[in-house]
Image (cartoon, rainbow, N blue to C red; front, side, top):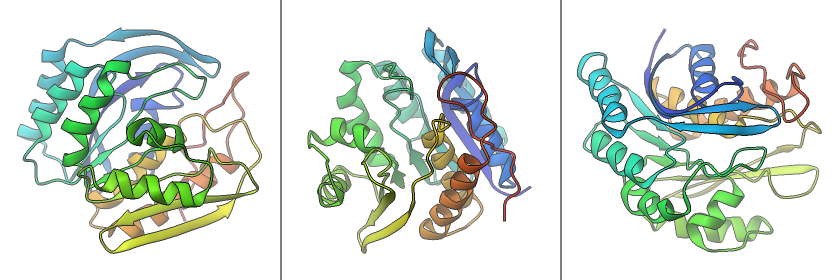
Length: 261
């Protein structure tokens, strides 16, 4: 076991996304997962049926006691659904030496909104400047930038605008575009890296964003470069989708327990 990852995110009772997916991912990749839970969701493959807030002071306490004792080699944030949560988490992790992976969770796979509409500006001003890398999908990037994204050139413009907001790198995932080929873009001050692959025809993709971000954070915690960490994360997620167990009547979970090659 190598690489301590503190995950600050919401719980998914269905186990496909959120803290549950994060813990499975980090564990599968040989890391150590610690958590601070920001919200509880009643959720299955058909959607989010309820959200219960966690008190702000308890969110902060979870973060503080983990960092004070166990420490972290990387920090990953997921569902931070309220302005007060975003501000508390940003204050708690500000100044930490560990790289921070920001997954700007906004909408669940089934369509339920997981970020209050008035919290977007807080995510931009408080969180993005702390990020070693921010990992939006296309709808999230559109909200954060105000741009419309319909092709890879649009993705590049959005990634450049996101980079100007303060993160040290942007991973913009292209799965929401149409077509048989998928393109993900990784942008740093050194320029773009393009990752391409074939689309897997399946509805069982619940938790892909959480899984990708946690796999990336685990790689960084283990001392991998950003490019190598994402390359491994991408391979891990692709295989987890390909071998998904098919549970549930909706967007089913991935196979987080597959053998990592």
